[in-house]
Amino acid sequence: MFIEILALLLTLFGIVYGIFRYRITYWARHGVPSEPNSTFPFGNDPTFHPDVLRSRRNPAYVLDDLYQKHKDKPFVGIYGPLGQQSIVINDLELIKHVLIKDFEVFVDRFGQFNVFGGDSEVFTDRLWRQQLLILKGELWKDVRSVFSPVFTSGKMKLMMHFMKAISMNLREEMKQCVESSKPIDLKDLFGKYSMDTIATCGFGVDAGSFGSTKETTFVKHAMNVFARNHWDNFMLMCSIIPGLNAFAKLLKVPFFKPVETQFFYDVIMQTIQNRVKTKERKNDLVDLMIDAIRFEKSLKENGEIEVEEESVIPSSSLVHKIKKTDFDETLVVSNALLILIAGYDTTAMTMTYCAYELAKNQVAQDRLINEIDEVMANLPDDQDFPDYNTIQTMPYLDSVLHETLRLHCPIPLVSRNNSRDYKIPGHDVIIPKGTDVYMMAYSIMRDERYFDQPTEFNPDNFSKEAKEKRSPYAYLPFGQGPRACIGMRFALLEAKIGLVSVLTKYRIKTCEETPQHAIRNNFTFLGNPRDKLWVAVEAR
Image: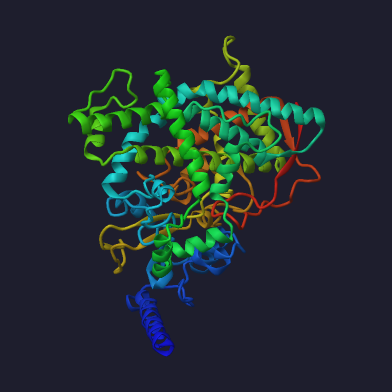
């Protein structure tokens, strides 16, 4: 019996291995340059590289190795687990086609592999699977239309008051550090600011980050969502290998961060319940969720939706989206969860790197302080802080933040998946339906063809003159096109207000503890620094 089972297993292995070996010849058979040396069963896709799966290197560095080998080619074929073909697009004009011109073909972000648990029926995995990051086709379009009103310029203006108030807490925390002559851990400081901002502006919740000497439960869970350990890497492999995937689903093992996901789900649901009970309206994300859930229930019960005058979703077109979409409470809350967690980490990370670079580049900091001082000096007598319109017309502040995002982009690549066969413009090459298409954001934004001295911090890369000379598709921290980051304007405004508040009163400097280089952490897909970025702060 043992021999028969062993023979069967060896036969199955041989079949799978044979299929893999055939699949990894696909690009060569179709005349497409490709990366050699595929390793069974993971192929040669850098996101599944052994060093990434073992947390030995940050994915951005492994992706960059591939880019540097092939950057002179317009595209290069690679292979994912079990030999599934993917393609990397390097040519900026082709990137424009994928993200903008031919977007109707590339609506979806992921295709072959869903790292958030595939079709797992565990509740916390289903929450992640229903987020804008994962949703496809018409469902993605409809859900994005419902959430977009939260991030309009009008809503941003209303949120300015809350952001300013929280930035005063940020400034007070800095004051205490100055008085104690202690260096500042930038990620800890800006993590508090970012968490309190997204929690207050989006959910009307006080995360209570400032004034605490320890990480709050909010911050601790948010940081853990994007941190990876060896168990997370194992579950990632389980999610993409059919046999392990099926076994994990049979045992109902959660694939992705169950404790942290459940915590934030409970917080959001409690917030919704409290708001419904008090009948208070703040025209924020919570009100939008309440409206969407109420509309969905009304539609099920009565077949009609009545839009109240104060609704966050007054548009008849958006109501139509809810009518035709399979909306439910889980779908609404899962996307609020994404906004909360992603809004925290990426903004805190960007502000951390920005302050670190300004500490190392005093000339750039002087220029930014001078711009801030000039703006403050010209404020009306009844204003003590720039308003929304003024903040948006500070060119050097804008350049400093965009240069930070260029040099330290939070997410190293932009991905799309085609819904039908696609002929690459200008080439006799067909990308078959369902292929993952990668654009190496981290590497493109550090390419000397687009940015002089690309590893140096230089805000003048985003002067009006510099931008006019360069393709806009060389800058991809938020993606581009209809599927670009929905919270981009919120994140930039939040960062600008925090920086203006700090630099109005303080100067950031290096100290003995400041690392010479900021190296990305191996235990996260994002760009969080491996080491704490310590700086000194002095009163101006």
